[in-house]
Length: 122
Image 1 (cartoon, rainbow, N blue to C red):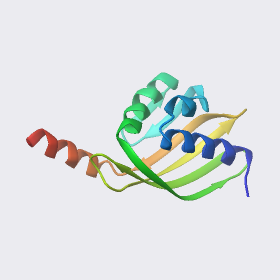
Image 2 (cartoon, rainbow, N blue to C red):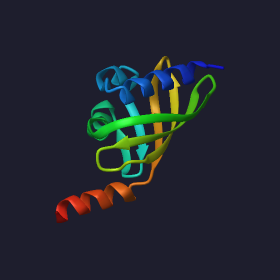
Image 3 (tube, one colour):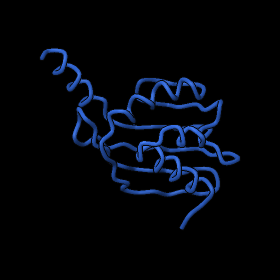
Image 4 (cartoon, rainbow, N blue to C red):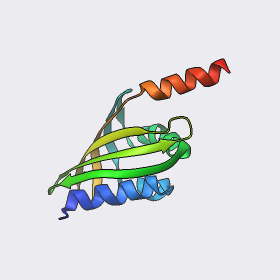
């Protein structure tokens, strides 16, 4: 079963996990607010600076669950990246007029921090 918010969320997710980040950004509102483990980001350019580099190290993704209603969608997925083989995450997206206006993303930064520390020590 689909919903307006879920349709947008899935299209956005498919674009960024499919290595088409520019298409993914077409689903993002100019004034998006993103709540990430690193803190609050405001605006599409700040969001681009956060999410863009992640898409560059992405090597795969598996969608585990997706639910939505008229304005809210929830996605859970597992990603594979160059430094971290399994990095599960979840996103709660608020959608208005076909654009993501708010995104809450949850993921564990610890494996990425450890990979960075190991690379710096090498």
